[in-house]
Image 1 (cartoon, rainbow, N blue to C red):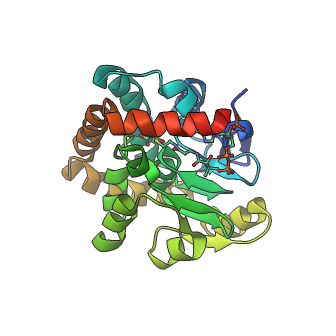
Image 2 (cartoon, rainbow, N blue to C red):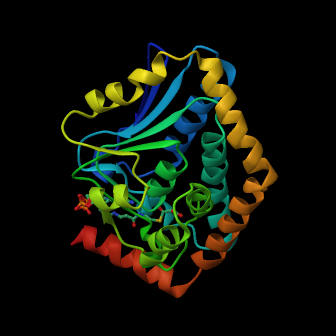
Length: 254
Ligand SMILES: CC[C@H](C(=O)O)C(=O)SCCNC(=O)CCNC(=O)[C@H](O)C(C)(C)COP(=O)(O)OP(=O)(O)OC[C@H]1O[C@@H](n2cnc3c(N)ncnc32)[C@H](O)[C@@H]1OP(=O)(O)O
């Protein structure tokens, strides 16, 4: 399996278990995300969703380049990008609090997944960034929209995107992307973070999330994320993108 789902006392944990590929997202992992989101949308016993990666090297390294490089045309790219884009929109608009428990590098689409969560607990060794620009594309799963909506100062948000590089955990906290930076056992950090929220009835969490969702609906967030995805699909066909992906894959084969 490429992911695991565990429900412990109402805390639903989704773990990407593709350590050998730094927890890169492929179709199977996308289907796992759909499964865990549907569980939350159809059950009342889930209080929190935690997303994390196996191991300590990576939370998620974004789209699986060894699979997705086969997508050549704008239409083929849009098929994959919009599938994950819809998943991230459903994730971002869940009525339960969502926590990205960032155990290692969160880059590219991995950074988009983390940004679509309400909270980001970042291990102090983890580096995160929207590195899509190094591949000649822009964020392709809606993460740019969620970053601009996250409340981070505009200049910090835009610089994160156009830098297209990774930031240290301390910098991520300084700019307001990381909710907390932790050392040691991620599960201890998680337990400490949710301890006070756990004492509050879930209906209060749902009500506050509803307030945010109303504002996102007014701001037409879904269609803004869709336009972001269409732009990435258009850039997918570029020579710059194909050359960058081939360089990465050839590095891996050397
Ligand atoms: C699909 C679009 C999507 C979007 O947002 O629209 C994107 O996510 S685009 C961005 C795609 N992701 C990347 O470009 C990141 C590539 N990976 C890295 O930068 C590094 O691997 C890193 C920083 C995540 C971890 O570095 P580390 O030195 O710890 O590991 P290695 O680089 O040696 O990689 C180990 C092993 O994993 C394979 N790998 C890593 N990331 C991916 C990936 N995204 N897709 C496929 N395979 C990946 C890498 O090739 C190595 O394999 P090996 O067979 O051992 O050589």
